[in-house]
Image 1 (tube, rainbow, N blue to C red):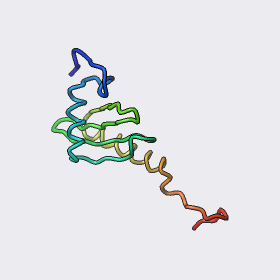
Image 2 (spheres, rainbow, N blue to C red):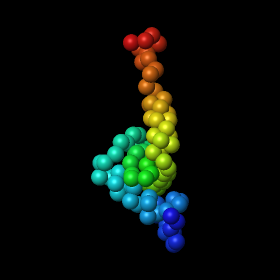
Image 3 (cartoon, helix red, strand yellow):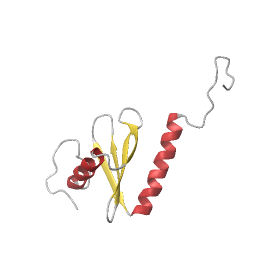
Image 4 (cartoon, rainbow, N blue to C red):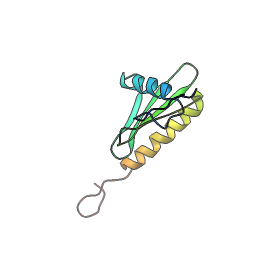
Length: 103
C-alpha cells in the first residue's frame, strides 16, 4: 500500500504514511513492547497485527519509520534490536570501581 500524495512531516519516508500513522497511534496506546529513547539509540515499538507485525522507530528529530513483515521475520528483527540495545546500554559489562576493579 503506497501513499498517493506524500506530505512533509514526521511520517515522510515511509512506503505508506497511512500504515505508519496507524502503527504509531497503536504504539501510543501502550499496546506493545517498546525499548530505547528517542535521544541516542532511538525509540522502538513492536506492534502485532493480524497478518503482519510492525517495528516502529522514532528518532531524535521526531521522524517515524515503520517496517513490517510476517510475524516470525519481525520477531527475529525485534530480538536483534533488543540485543543491540542491551549492548548499547552496556548491559553484561561489569562495573568497575575507582581503582578499575570489578565491584
